[in-house]
Image (cartoon, rainbow, N blue to C red; front, side, top):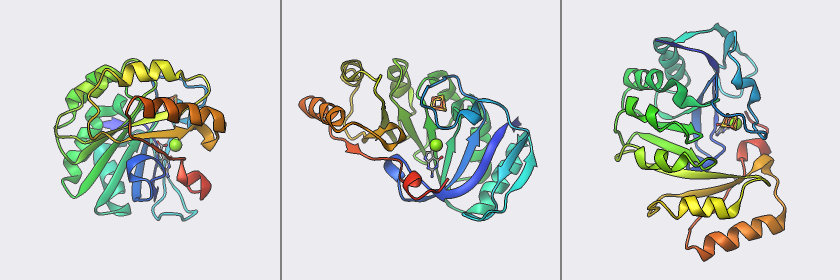
Length: 228
Ligand SMILES: Nc1nc2[nH]cc(C(=O)O)c2c(=O)[nH]1
Ligand code: SF4
Ligand SMILES: [Mg+2]
């Protein structure tokens, strides 16, 4: 099995529940959405080479010809870290759900696998095992979120990320959130490009609290540190 991969590197997880934790990142090519604020537009297209950074923070990069086999992907992850956190991102990683399942099968239970998804492809979830080692970081940016949230395998932990941008409606977001049981699900507000108008943020905070939600506002910490 093969997939077009943009890059594989080790860095500090900059978003969400695992922010601050060292992680290996696997960035897939291709996305089913076209968000105006996307910071990885390059990943929309297939890449000729997968850029593999064999040592974290080093300048040295190996150009691995695409497509990359699941076996080679698992090896590259293992050599960066024989255990710990693996973040599958993109693009949209669930366009490659079968491939991810195969990589996970090859690497085994020594890792926590984080799927950083835009939350719009619930049908892809059937390819992934129901495992507490597989964690879903789900963006709330589309009404398909509802079906997705309910379809996540029951043993898999999950958390929600709301990318705060000026076109996102608080009312519509609350309508979606109010339809799901949230008990214990962490909720993160992530200002797009790490910038937000204070008044706008206060409005989000006011309405979320009025509706009983517990949340954290967390910028992308890797961007402050100028890491990848
Ligand atoms: N450091 C770091 N953390 C991240 N968390 C999510 C990322 C993403 O692009 O999905 C990302 C990323 O690109 N870099
Ligand atoms: S879902 Fe993510 S990767 Fe896809 S276009 Fe939107 S921001 Fe970019
Ligand atoms: Mg990113």
